[in-house]
Length: 334
Image (cartoon, rainbow, N blue to C red):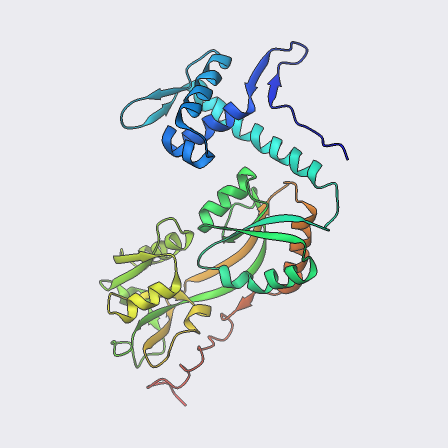
């Protein structure tokens, strides 16, 4: 079988004059993203002199300076801003072209990378297991980042599919809802909330919070809800992992707000868990993909599995279901 190669240099039509060498463009964009030649070299697995040489070559090709460098930061020139913005479109188009050419075969073998956020990974386990059973020769690779990083990777074309926290921009990303959950207060047993059935969010003002990592979209959701309730949370620690957050609560570091599925896993003898009200805070997860973007055979097969698995989003909102073991807390009416 003959392989189709893709020319790595763009040319002016009917001139033979090179506009941009794609590798140089990729290196330049990574330098801007990382704000460092050294970090870009590490990310791309090349030497720093190679990065510097390619960026200089790109400036020579375009005939203008693209970056202003000083000891603190790198600033894009007007020309650099244009090359950076348009260059991302060029690389995304090249990646899509390669994907479409590579996808001319069948689902017999191959790989699929899916973005999985740390706070929602377990939601996707059933679909992963079903997909693996159905397509054993397709390797699933997991891109484990926060929802915001996954959303950016979907838009840039780096990822085809990924778990995202709603809402997202519907003009950029299509979604398949996966879950619709409440966030619950999680405190150590023996707290002042032991005999309550629910807690208004405003009542948590002044309490030490074990919060979400700043790179996680859920951090913004909870922070905005607290501000709506009239206070700024007192953050004493951060994590993107629910089990570590619960352990910190148990150690007396502070309280936390966790999605209902993780509350169900906690020991009712050691934790007090209450639904938060006024306002309720919801955790809405979905599988997202770039709107009008190309989806490979493997990605479309994954969505077929996911649609069957998540035909109706899992929810605790309708009837305030209490986690197992918490139904008979002191003070709950019989």
